Amino acid sequence: GALHMRFSDNHDQRRAITRFGERAALAASALMFTLDGVPMLYNGMEVGDASESTDPALFERVPIYWESGSGHLRPWFTPFYQGLIALRRTHAALTAGELVWLHNSDEARVLTFLRRASNETLLVAINLSTRRGGRIPRHHARRCAAADARARAGGASSNVSGGLGLPHLSRDARRCAMSRRRALAGVLLLAGARAVTAAPPAYLERLPEQEIIYVLLPDRFAKPDPQPEAARDGDRLVTGYDPTDPKFYHGGSLRGVVRQLGYIQGLGATALWLAPVFVNQPVQGPPGRESAGYHGYWITDFLHVDPHFGTDADLHALVSAAHARGMKVYLDIVVNHTADVIRYRECPVGSRARTRLTRTSRT
View (cartoon, rainbow, N blue to C red):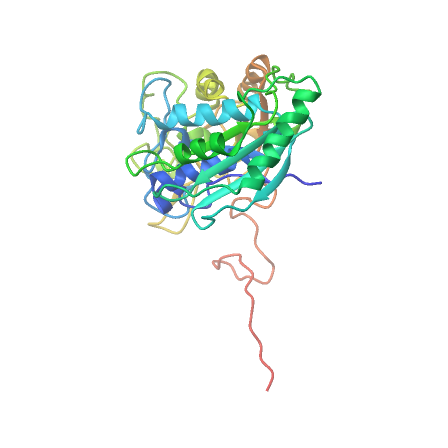
């Protein structure tokens, strides 16, 4: 069947950290990386970026240039995400295991569920509040302990000393409920059998659910050189380039993405999802309200790379460099998005080419 794409941030919504706050954003990410499906990191999540000032988040007001080792707005976010990714890659139950929701004594504040595979059972508890969590029912602890016993009988070594009896489980569950001074997103993982620590398959052999996808807008990610590039010649209403205006191109490119592949891979991501990179109409909009297609959604040619981002050869080089690192590249081909170059026959010249729904009523 179909897989869920798990995400809390995307270009159509404001970031979770601006909507719900820092702690709740981390809790949402903890849930995203421990549920079934495919987790997706939208660039900026890993440093707790909250710089946007408009909705949707596609039009971030501040350019996002993540330089490895610098520019971290919230430096504690990065190891948090690296830890979540490491957990997911270490335990096969998190990528291919069955999902079983569990009841607990404080379900309005704490989520508990099992991820269960043939050789391991994991208990996940995520505290959604700033209060300390409740107790997990005894029969759920016994269920995990039984899984541990079965694994031992089958010759598998347990990575939880003494099994998963209730005293051990309750103590860790209390630790999982974070205090107000710490990040809210406490994640408890207790394995009922041995962890699967095999290296991830080669990129051509990986299943979709084994991917960790990092999503970015090339114009707002990294420039091709460490130093800011010189201003381009020409009228911005022709070139679309104006790094002082959030609605215009800022100079990020495919070569810049290549330069930062090590940073992306260092987070634990296994795949890269690029916002549309195809030829766009540089500028459009009524007089005084013009903006540029830096986001890639005003496509006029689906067969070639927009010169603002580079060349067709640059895209080939990016894909080759990613494959050399064992990473996949997903291209966002939005056939339902083009520039405003299509006009309906019924629309008079000068009108906006939109269809309108007319409400009719019966009398």
